Image 1 (cartoon, one colour):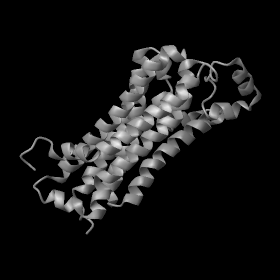
Image 2 (cartoon, rainbow, N blue to C red; image 1 turned 120 degrees about the vertical axis):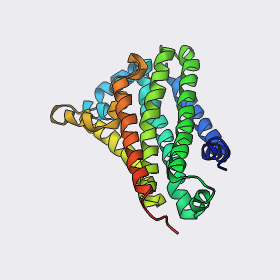
Image 3 (cartoon, one colour; image 1 turned 180 degrees about the vertical axis):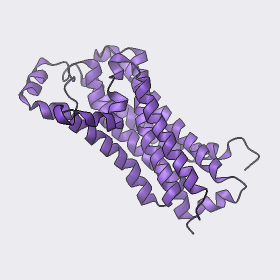
Image 4 (tube, rainbow, N blue to C red; image 1 turned 30 degrees about the horizontal axis):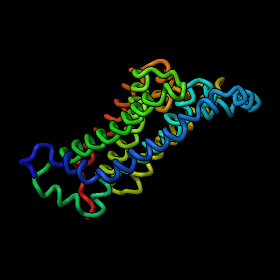
Length: 267
């Protein structure tokens, strides 16, 4: 194993290609289901009247305040909700399996017996997670670009790519935390709870902060807001928000590595 270039990275990608195909089909189906409906839903004046009849607090909380624009509709239905859920589940599942899953089954010790270091295990499997998530995010952008004219979305290709970068960075946060908690605790249940939990907390903080007033300061603590505050589908990439998300992921992984290098593995 040690004689190959990036053996654990290659193995992780090879072992997960079926799940990657499944998630790719899920992303494709979600976009194909929602995006073409924009002319009849998001672009319908009757929908705006319906939204105006709802409490503004509810509309702001679920992010439907911009649903009548192509960028706002795509953000609200896919990047801020369905797509986010799909990629978060995928990231958390892959992140949990990377360390905690293998440790609970005993295969992690067998891997380490082949002359690879614990640091190598974490870094190469994290890289594999990033590549898989990156593909799903890129796939979403390519499909949106392909459908934007037919659905009348008016989304520029570079902005679709910016939204892909945002959803990648946001969901990679869940995956990296799942890996880190697996490094610290070695238990799938803790890693899964952490990966899913940070996504739920990020979304909830943003929803509450959208009410404005005394709770607006919660935006600063929401990774969801870091990703989407700049409305990437209409305004382009927010490099500061992306930097915060990727930087926090790096912190999680550094803490996980430090703990992983010092503890006994579960037997």
